[in-house]
Length: 318
Image (cartoon, rainbow, N blue to C red; front, side, top):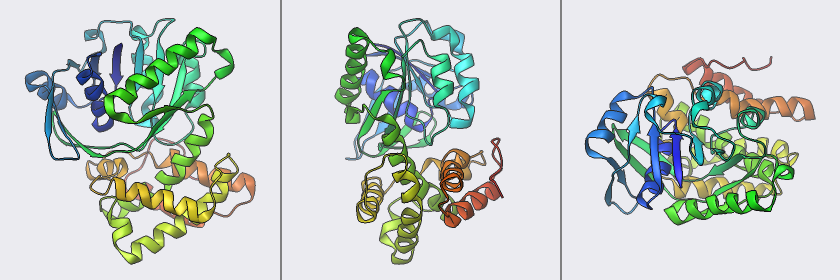
């Protein structure tokens, strides 16, 4: 499979590297981290596995889109969610009528944008519990394993041939080690992951701790549980079929499975970059207002993270 990863930071590099290791023709593209690109060009991509091994993967990398031969069969979008429009605009030369556009990005709110740039019916949206940390230029730590779920944003537009292609992509991701499975109800999957992210990411970003610390410390664990309980009714309104005890177990399970991982939001804060808080806590606050569900903890976390570093997206409602 011919693949381009747009936004090859921590997770994008991991996914692209694992696919390249399976023999797929992969390009990693990152215009904002030239040091990372140059390191991959010089010595390959280094992946630290959860078992402590280090894999060296030969994979081409580019800081300019024109360096990548196109079009591609699969365009993976791994930029920060607020940068999606710009990334897709730059990547247009790589998109052909048979290209699938895949997003495993955090949060919700970019689905219509993906539909607009992808060929008819070929927008894929999904979630992943795989943990990745960029520890140095050209070096990624695979910090935790977990399921990857993806499905089409417009299933009604797919014929049998396209559906088989989609499932082939799922099999390729699964064979690469990403524990991928086809998810026909992708909105429910997105909101379930949003529930997880809205609990873990703001807390780790504000406290400066890896994911596992949230369940290791009794006080932090109590806060984590309160945040989950508050956000759950909003997620339930979007099809998430979890009881409070199940939702807490899910979030705590992700914390344990990715215990060493530094959340993407914490990594952004430490690097002084804008965060994705407007697409994580923001949708829960806005939907809570629409549904009449109070979300004071999410609103507080949203404002505190924004105080750490302003983001380019709209401000939270008053």
